[in-house]
Length: 419
Image 1 (cartoon, rainbow, N blue to C red):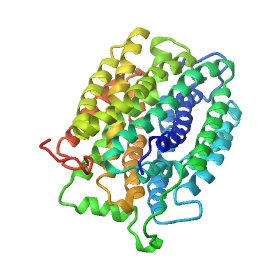
Image 2 (cartoon, rainbow, N blue to C red; image 1 turned 60 degrees about the horizontal axis):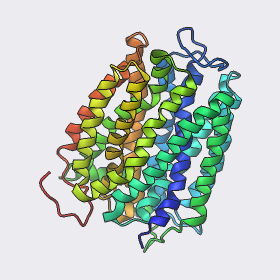
Image 3 (cartoon, helix red, strand yellow; image 1 turned 90 degrees about the vertical axis):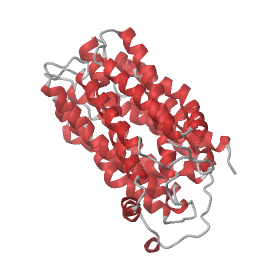
Image 4 (cartoon, one colour; image 1 turned 60 degrees about the vertical axis):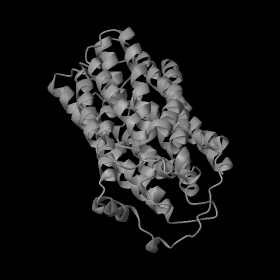
C-alpha cells in the first residue's frame, strides 16, 4: 500500500547521501587546487596545487567507479533475496565503509597524496555499493501513478541534504576544514540507519535464480532492439542534461572564488540557494509531472535551465548569483524529479533495479565526460571559469532534441496524448 510516511522515512537515506556528495563536490576541488599560484583559496587550506583539468579528471573518479558498479549492483539486487531483503544488504555494508573513507579525506589533506586518494577511493567504492539499491527502494514501494510525486518527495529530502551541505557545511568549514566531513559522514550513516530500521521491502512474487533473470546487459539489449526508441532517446537526454548540471556543480565554487572574489566557505554557502529551490519545488514538480505529463514538464525545465546557464556567463555580482541559482534549482527539479519515473515506467516490474542502473549508466557516463571536458575548456580559455556556463547551456539544448521524440514513460494510468 502506498504511504507518504514510508517515503519520508526512505527520504532520510537520500538526504544523507545528498549531503555527503554535496560536501565532497564542494570541497574536494578546492583541496586539489589550493596551493596553485593563480588559484585563490581560503587562508589555511593546504592543498595539492593541481590544475583545473587534472582536478576535473579526479572529480570524475566517482563517476568512473559508479559506471562500473552502480548498474551492475542495481541489476544484481533485482535477482537476489536474503533475510534482510534484496536492497538492504548493500546499504548495511556500504554506509559504514563510506563513513570511514569520507572522514579520512580531511585527515590526509596536506600530507601524503597517496593516502588522500586512498580515502577518496574507499569513499567512492562504498557509496556506489549502496546508491542504486537505495534509489530502487522508491519504485519498490510506490505504484506507477505516484512515482513522480514520490520522486518529488525523495528529491525534497535530497535537497535538504544539499542545503545542510552548503549552508551548515560552509559554517563548519570556517571552524575546521574537517568539520563538514565529520558532520556529513555521521548524518549519512544516521539516514541510512533509518531506512534499514523502518522500511520493509516488499518480497517479490517469485525469486528467480541469478542465472535465470535478465540483468543489465539483457535490459540494455532490449532497449536497443525495441522498435520504439523512447528509452534510448531518454538515456541520451539524461547524458546531455547531466553534462550541464555537472558543469555547475563541480566548478561553481571555483567560479565564485576566482571571479566573484568570495572565500571558499561563502562560495559553498551560495550553492545552498540552488538546493533550497529544489527543496521547495521538487514536490510541486512531481505533482505537475503527474498531472500535465512528465515530458512536458521536463521540456519547460530544460529550456529554462539552458537560458539560466547562459545568463551565468554574464554574472559579476553576488546579487545576480542569488537570483540565478534559485531559478536554476526550480528548472533542474522539473527535469530531475520526472526523469527517473519515466525510465522506471518503461521497465518491466522485475527489472526496476536494472533500469535504475541504466539511468545511472547514462548519468555517470555524463559525469565522467563532463568535468574533464569543462575543465579542459576552462584551461583553454586561460582559467576563465565563466566558460563552464556556456558549455552547460549548449548541452541542455542538445538534451532537448533527445526529449522531443519520446513517446513513452508517462504514468501507466495516464492516457497518452500527442506530445
